[in-house]
Amino acid sequence: MKRFVSFLPAAGYYFLIFVLSSSDIGIPVNVRHFDKAAHFAEYALLGFLVALGFFSSLNTSLTLKLVLSLVTSVTLAGLDEFHQFFVPWRAVELLDLLADVLGATGGVFGFLLFYSKRKQLRRSSTARTF
Image 1: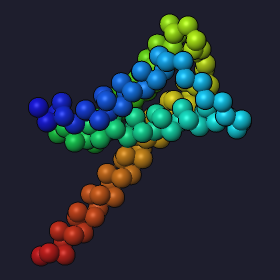
Image 2 (image 1 turned 90 degrees about the vertical axis):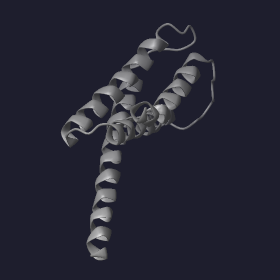
Image 3 (image 1 turned 30 degrees about the vertical axis):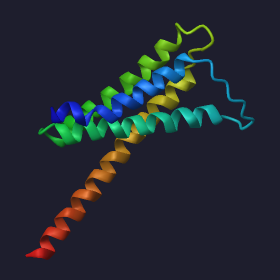
Image 4 (image 1 turned 120 degrees about the vertical axis):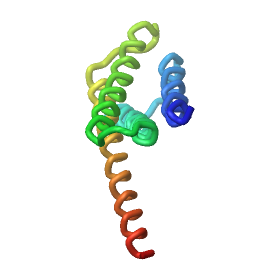
């Protein structure tokens, strides 16, 4: 049950991405490449949440958790772009996919940085109590 619960934030967030990419929400922004930055940020959060799920639910090696997090996040990014192919008012763009993949990867490595710092802090606080 803990494994399932660990992935709820990522699943809920991906569901939100899916719903929004199925809708016809057009927000006019006159900032060059804003949409690519939005794609990057959107998938960075997803990558972080997917990594959170794997790191908190699996009792395996750090490398396996990292690989699973990356593969899952990048696959979800690809699936969203593929899904947009079937939505009449949406377009599949290679640069959007690239921003999604880079964001997901950045989110996973951001989580890894957070995870290692947290682990370091726990070790140092445990050492002080003895």
